[in-house]
Length: 115
Image (cartoon, rainbow, N blue to C red; front, side, top):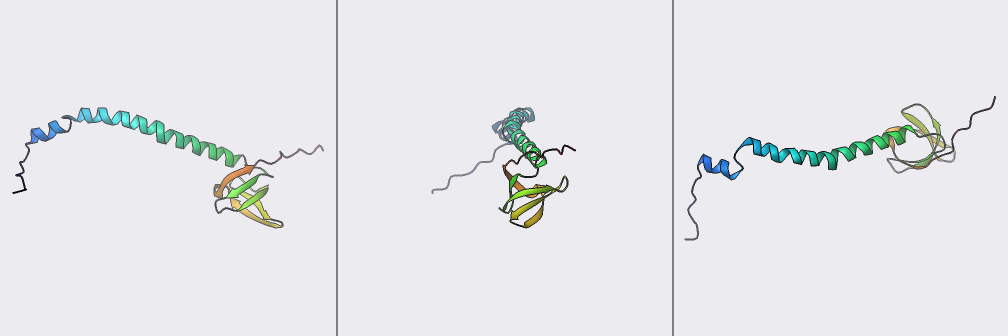
């Protein structure tokens, strides 16, 4: 008919079909891991480091966009984890720094009082 008989392979045939030894598999995986590191892990770490630096450098007068899409101006840096943002005239809210998705316009540096 249309069905051909299936023949079982011996154990030696199966190992020779996939490279033979575990050493050859390791030799294949090491370059793969190196490529994975340079294409995925390293750029992601650099991007996270840049984001952390940007969030730490937020100061009064910066225009930001929150994770929810609200655009506002930083009026006060409360502490290292929170900032106060004016989202409308007279409407101020406190936002956690990790909730900030983008810093659009950097504000003017705060002038020191000459007292």
